[in-house]
Length: 244
Image (cartoon, rainbow, N blue to C red; front, top):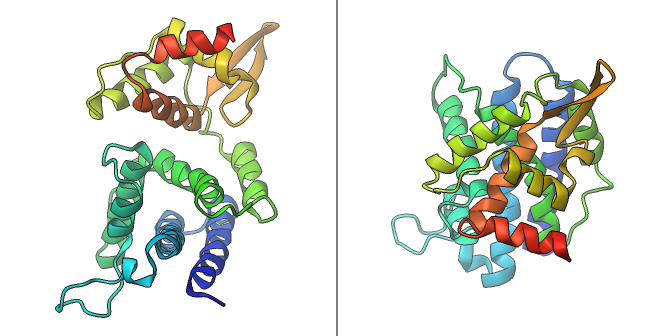
């Protein structure tokens, strides 16, 4: 088996453990273990991609001091996701920092915002495996795991439309993007991408015979990613899609 295929095989096996751990395990060190395994799965997957593009020399240090050693996950990320402001890259880097902390020392506090970043990296692993390697993960435990996330995570749909827009604007500000989303522009995203119809993004319940909408961190990451790609005229792009 070629080196690239070996890395992909191991990456998929490790990621199946990530899915099981994230969805079904509720004991101690859950998040620590998920982060360690998730970083491992991403590193092997990205190394396989780099080998496919540049050969094995693409993942090996060239200086004498590190001769024979392969690069780490941070270096893989910078080679594949060259935009340092890319939201997936930034979330992966946050997970790596936490992974490094728990591996090398004990961590007494936990930033709750890391939950959505971990989930974003889990969901996008499947997407990038398809995009970078043309590998369909639907036959693995990933789909089942995602369903369990939706069923069991009571905190998943934690945003009202107002609080969701506020949090999106906070993230955009942290990325240095001046665009601000409001209720009207959110409805444009909904019309184009069917946000309220997507159970991964929206939970609909009836309150006094009227629909009530709650939104997940997944839609937050999705909308931020779209705005990040085209911050200057995203509203015009959405309106043009509606016209078509």
